[in-house]
Amino acid sequence: PLVGHLDPDFLAILSDVKDLLRFVFQTENELTLAVPGTGTAAMEAALSNLIEPGDRLLACIHGYFGERLAEMADRYGAQTKRLQRPWGEVFDPDEIDLALSTFPAKIVTLVHAETSTGALQPDIDVISEICHRRSALLVLDCVTSLGGMPVEIDSWDVDIAFSASQKALSAPPGLAPITINPRAREVITKRSSPPPVFLLDLLLLERYWSDQPVYHHTAPISTTYALREALRLVYEEGLPARFQRHRAVAENLWQGLEGLSLPLFVPQEIRLTTLATPQLHQGIDDSNLRQRLLEIYNIEIAGGFGPLAGKIWRIGLMGYSSRVENVRLLLAALEDLLKK
Image (cartoon, rainbow, N blue to C red; front, top):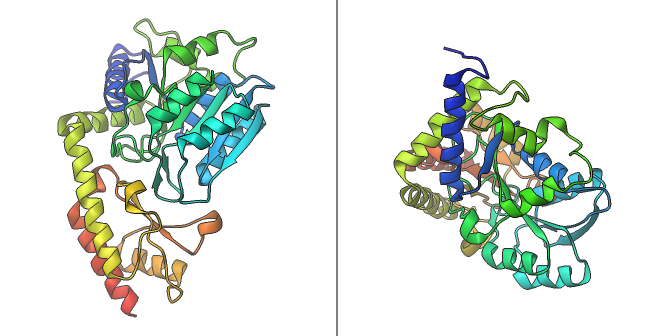
């Protein structure tokens, strides 16, 4: 039954969610919770709590969502410098070190798993060390990696990381997990004025998610319950087994796509196992084929966007749906449609 957002039973669910989020983030951060909204809301929470007008921010951009973080920083009054790599490539840590040597920044934003390209940014621990040596905080977008690929917030020493409930965690959309380490929390507490977005004020949310909650907003009760159940499934499967399942299924799909003359957009060593991005050859009518795939086989895959519109597909392999039987069905459907 639906219970109130301050009901003791619901508060027990919030406590479970906190503990389970610490498990999937691999962190001991006390300030770990889920903000209401999608992954974009967690982006807003991270930046609106850290940035004060005039702060310098280095935005590392190698796809659409890196640029989204930069646009948000602009709106919060940051002095934003964009460090760019072509879509589908990743950063060498030395590039970030060089950029910080000429542009001392308070914050560095980086996308771990770029959903627009299928690329995984490696060397997060090295980049984090560089940021801290340069007196910068690292904000990491883990929307498409958390729950499907290794995310090790404490051992990488990441200051703020966030994700979304509907990706590899396999919960309904509507909640955005976020974790904040003591270093970043101290910066937030020393702001000269409160964060500009009341709903996403992390210190107020922390009080609501505490053992002695203080009312802040009406939480999405049913979605929170669903997130707890999804996180329980992650815990029961175990992270190593879950990551191995995602990799095995991804490799199965990669091999099948290559056999259909649909080579992958990014090299294997930086390829997500939660999202595949095959390149389309000139004979494929992108939107028409995806529409027929949906209408005939009830399978939905996403197209590319930005400079990759019409050039790649984005095939999700996340959470519960990352299964060999689903890959086999998709490959058989694509083989049939590509013949016509």
